[in-house]
Figure 1: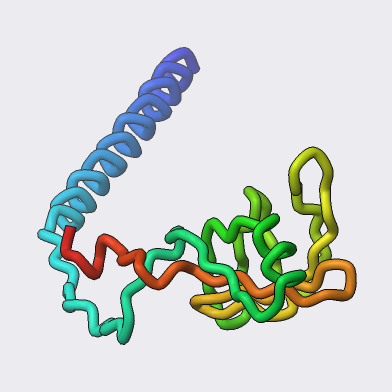
Figure 2: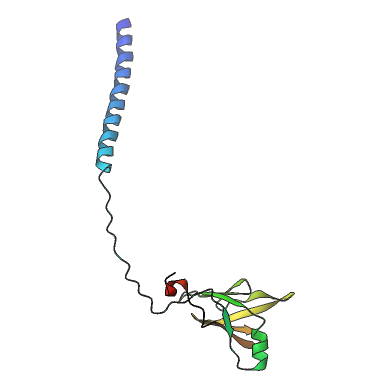
Length: 148
């Protein structure tokens, strides 16, 4: 009987060594298979912009009337992040989304504005029932256009 116990101990240890050997052999095989060189297919971009512009260019305000130009001078259009579904404008440091009222700082107070139209070049705001149009300045050119 004592021989039976010793035999069982050695058999258990031998199984562990055999399993470790199989595991090691499997990882070596997996490493040689995985070491094949990865060569992704890279294609040149087909995107061709029709116009280049700087979304954070200067501002230009519409001047259709003296009251509108006075109201427009209170707002600084800092940039337009244009997306067809969700355009956003940065006005006086605040993100303004389409048809969502936002409190924008003007001087020492804040004014509620609502963007009714945001295009690539202009933003039309509704402020206290009055429409105010802000434009990006036409003289600002993006670095992409100048090749810098």
